[in-house]
Image 1 (tube, rainbow, N blue to C red):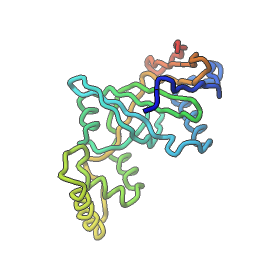
Image 2 (cartoon, rainbow, N blue to C red):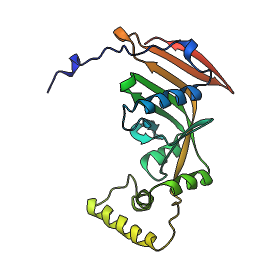
Image 3 (cartoon, helix red, strand yellow):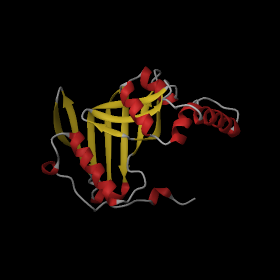
Image 4 (cartoon, rainbow, N blue to C red):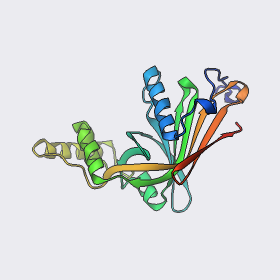
Length: 213
């Protein structure tokens, strides 16, 4: 195994100044996401680490996809009966982390989650490919299953069912919205003197401040 202690990269692409930032961090996030998408430098720039905490205080993280940016938050979709779905009901505090290494940037978002409306979940579900819709019905996400073939069999059963009838969103599947309380923008800089700008919400107003790297 290679010595990972000597693996390092110096960040030199850009810098982050307060004067260049939007007063609203959600607008600033949209700008950064648009930049990385236009760069075509990453396969899934909307991929994010979602960290949740159980009722016992145990953290858990996984990659999910951001699917919509609302005026007041960030939307993603999942099985409500999954581990993350249950934890988000038990403890509404969560964190999102975006890492865009090609632009030497990351964004960390802390806040509370709430379920989006059934109408919004229906709209997204209906826009998904048929195969993904069937998968939402077939997979009891996070449950223990006997083997891979079991899941394939369940998928085939639901595929056969919905070939002859209209497919609808299962009640156990839908969207969450993380409503941010803290958003931090990180831009890599030389000599590990990274730029970190943090926004904190107070009512409807955002306050910006610089953090030491």
